[in-house]
Image (cartoon, rainbow, N blue to C red; front, top):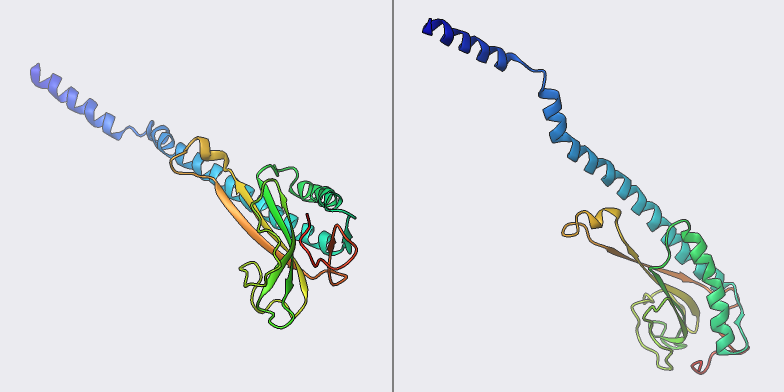
Length: 208
């Protein structure tokens, strides 16, 4: 009788080993988090690429719009107000994504008439608290202007832009996923040779 009960127990155990009915559920329980991460990861990468492309488009658009101007206002205040209005185009270029973390510095550089590798900043403008280099009457080398970019005495409009991208998964995995800061630089030749900032003649002095 005891032997019969033991044999029955062995038989039931073997049947349990052959039972595969719950394997799919167990495998799915293990794979589900991985599949979700892959899905959200793909979505996040696609979102980042789209926003980055819009950021670059906004940078180039502002450079082109500023370079088309011959004069920005009759005073420094009017010039700043006009640039503020131009920046609306950058906000629209980023739509429907947020532009709140986008910063830009707009410059007009002019190369030295005897040494094109040295430039000076004739005027600058900061958008959204961007830290910019100030106007200067001194000609020096500047990292925003490559040494072979300008000819002697020529001017260039330079856009120095920055954008902080915040991934949607950052709050779920804060120790792994961090904010990213993108930078972009665009250079344009002024359509009229120079963009006068708050005055109708050459920017020979720094705007006040």
